[in-house]
Every structure is written in structure tokens, then in C-alpha cells.
Amino acid sequence: MLLNDKSVIITGASRGIGRAAALECARQGANVVIGYSGSASSRPAVDELIAEIEALGRRACAVGAPAGDADTGDKLVEAAVEHFGGVDVFVNNAGICPFHAFLDMPKELYLETVNTNLNGAFFAVQAAANQMKRQGRGGAIIAVSSISALVGGGMQTHYTPTKAGLLSLMQSCAIALGPYGIRCNALLPGTIETDINKDDLADAEKREYMVSRTPLGRLGRPDDLAGPIAFLASDMSQYVTGASLLVDGGMFVNLQ
Image (cartoon, rainbow, N blue to C red; front, top):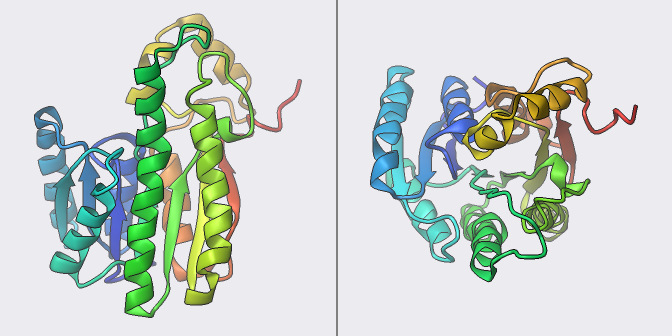
């Protein structure tokens, strides 16, 4: 029970990495605010997740609001305070990656990606940090960045800068928020099988190539991120801040 009675906010939690993290945090004793897009199509998955968390003996609530909205962070924090009395952990996981070539990148697609992945994250982290400061007991902020923060992608010129931005944001926030006992760290997943890349990985040749680039011999699963998130959220990592943790099966270091 690494997170016993802690209040955890997770964005993009209706599916994929966010969903896996929400369940693991609940298993570790946390109550969870589930941030999701607010779309009607996502609500059944959210209701199912709430039921699973409650079956673990923990509590959960949901806030439906676009991750790219500057006000969404305030709504998430308000829900955490109302339902669970405060915020101990904030996990910024929401993100999109609509693959597209650089030279004809639509302005709308670029701006949507930046707003969803980075601008909204900035204001949500700020809202959570201010609440943690008011509470006076520290806290943990975790951003799900990507291996793409460290390498390029020809079809991801709008995406990789946002993930590099998240990594940099955690490094700078670690300095800015350290005096308040608030730790800020980033996770850098490799190729994780989620909805964000299912179309790209539907290409059997591409999929096999990505597996071959991974020393552990398989693509990642959302559950592979859940443990590291719980660790960074817990007091087991009480002296870890400003760090970046690769969770990529060894892909980044494989140059051969």
C-alpha cells in the first residue's frame, strides 16, 4: 500500500497508460480523480474504471474536460479537494499523436497537438502545484513524456517537441517546487501498445521492426508504466526529483 489514502489525479485516464496507472494507484491504496476528454463515447469506459476502483475498496470520481483547455487543471483540483480533501499526486498523462508529414502539416493539427500535450499540461501542473503548496505537505508530480523527447520522428514533428517540453517542464518545476517539498519527475515510455499508435502498428512490417529494436523482445503494455508511476508517486522515491526514467524495454540504448 505505497499510496495509502493519498489523493491522485490522472489525466487521460479512461484508457491506455492512464487507466493502468489509475488501477495500480488504487491497488496501492489511493483514491483517484479520473481526467478524461469529456466525450460521450469515453463515458462507458470511465464508469467501468470507477467500478473497478471501487471494487478494490477505494474511491474514484471523474472530470470530463479537454486536456488542452487551460481551465481543466483547476477543475481536476477542485474535484480532488471536494471528494478527497486535497491533492497528493498529479499524473499528467493525456496526449495525442496524430501522425502527419511535416511539409504539409495543417496549422490546426499542430496547434491541437501542442495545446493537448503541452500547454494544457503546463496549466494543470500549475494548478496541482498551487494546491499542494497550500496544503503544506509536499506532493509528487509525474509527467508521462516519451522516448520521443530524446529522438526524432519524421511523422511526429508536431509531437516530439511537446514531449521534450514535458521533460523540460518537469526539470524546471523540480527546481521551482522543491522548496515546497513537491517532487517532479518524467517517465519516457518507448513503444507502448495503446490507441494512440494502433493504426501505425497495424502495419505488420513496422510492428516487427519496432519489436526487433527492443532488447526485451516485445512492445510495451500500459501496465508496464503503472509500476513506475506508483513508485514515483510514493515515498519510496522521496529523494527523487528532476529525474527522467526510460520505460522502453531498452529501445533507446539499442544502436545496433
